Length: 505
Image 1 (cartoon, rainbow, N blue to C red):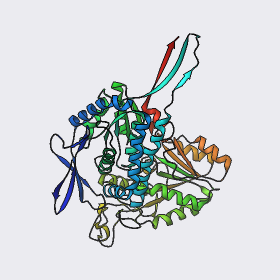
Image 2: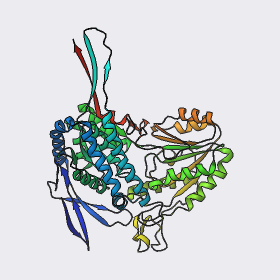
Image 3: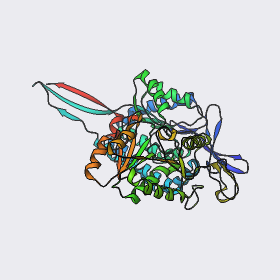
């Protein structure tokens, strides 16, 4: 279902739920608005489903599971490969949808969409490599083997910050393994998920195999996905707080879980590093998607002997970043997703300054000569008709551990820089957090490279690399940053059960 309704003077597309191979309205007939975070305008409306529709989607996936799981791996792979090809063919169209609902620069959206397609393609290839084993028996009159079978219905809950790639990173291995799925995208960014589902429908995925539920009742829908016994695995990307709640609920039916949760990534710069490469890397890592990235740099530690020079290089680069509507040419930093995110950034900057931090770049809400506002809610009739929650890319010098920004995930364009003296001190400070998702460091010392990489308590380490991700690289965290891994050759295994078969002769 996709109808047009009138909003003000603009025709707005209204999207339905996708359950059992059909687009349909919610039971209540209600919908919710999706807004462009850069302009505030309504760009679409989506069916406001709830717990009842979630249950129906689970039932549809449960009915479809036996037939889908028995299809040859090459057949399942074929659907995924066709979907990946269509995503690449329509990359510009999909990227524009992504920027409209998320706000990130169009170049980033194009990159994310290409990456999302690669998750489908990678798992299409992995579908053919679901191997079992022959196990040597302890008896002469028996033979033992193992086989891998799909776990069953998978529930997937995806976030708003990477709303395209997170959909395919979860659906790809689930479908390749032979599972059926129910997806609940973030309410702020459901449109790219809908576009992907239309592609899956176009390539002929059998009805009930993939189901999509949108709605504003996050708690009710999440509770149903986590407690319904017909769901055998839940995969979630989001905050650690919500992840803990879902893990507890999944325990009532002993579901499998994959959790990619919060992070607080350190970035260490040693005195032997190439400072220009390190400065470029830290700016790329921190300010991508306006800092709203779970693996982006949150705090920088620079060896004391080069701290002044390095900080100056970073501040200069950050001051030159262009802020604005992601659809405009040359924009590098878009808006924060909503007022809540903006207020948290404000709080962290205010706290850092109150505790002795020095603002070296940015430090305040973004305003343009046209809108003239300095309260963060940029609105006006200049370039891009900005009316969103924008904050200047910010660098804080003289940082220290007591600042909120040094131990809470900011999820915004703020970069604190702190000095250190020894390698051991840097590793200790980097590990002093309950999180363990991603960490970065720059050095040209080979021995140090291995010592630090092995000493950091993180699931992903970028050594002289600010973007250590891809369909071939395992993604997940230590400690409170998550459970299990996505991507890589091991990713599909989290959607499979291992069955031992002992045969008497």
